[in-house]
Length: 215
Image 1 (cartoon, rainbow, N blue to C red):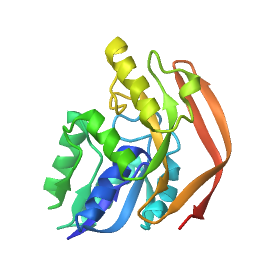
Image 2 (cartoon, rainbow, N blue to C red; image 1 turned 90 degrees about the vertical axis):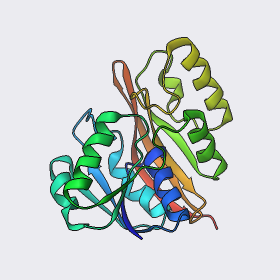
Image 3 (tube, one colour; image 1 turned 60 degrees about the horizontal axis):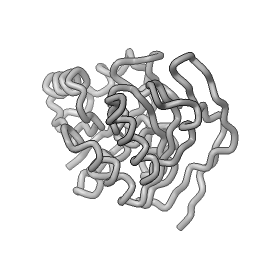
Image 4 (cartoon, rainbow, N blue to C red; image 1 turned 180 degrees about the horizontal axis):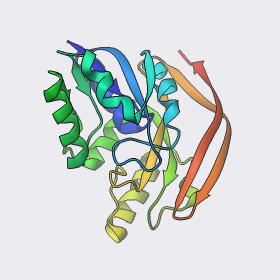
């Protein structure tokens, strides 16, 4: 089974690709969308790091403009399209339409799964990641750079009860960046970063990094 995977650099697209690999799908390459600011379809902060996160999985990556996305997948007839869709009907419906038009098989392993279970599966896989964007009440600048771990999950559950935020950031409440994968033993080490304040939204921009082989 051959596949292509949409990789933003965040935990959901990464975990979906990891699940696909574990289940025997041969991912030929990953595609990172250089999204328009505040895109409704694709991850925006640090999206160019999708290439680095692909390397954490040992996969080749290409980066394309959002406007090129629909035409670029037409060459993958018969492949599986792997994506990290969880609850967005808009995202899922658009991707399914593109798959149907191009005779591609959609593969969305996280769709409608319990959100706490998704975070736990990410953590229990041995993968690591941090928050790189916050955009919701209760999530302020101090959450930038926070590791995805049990402590963060407990905080998110508390904020979910108080403000109704999505545990996985499905509503744009936060965005994440994967920094380690047990699949290859590779780590993304951040060398230089910058916080950008956009009012309600705070961004942690990664300005330089290096990849380190840990085992």
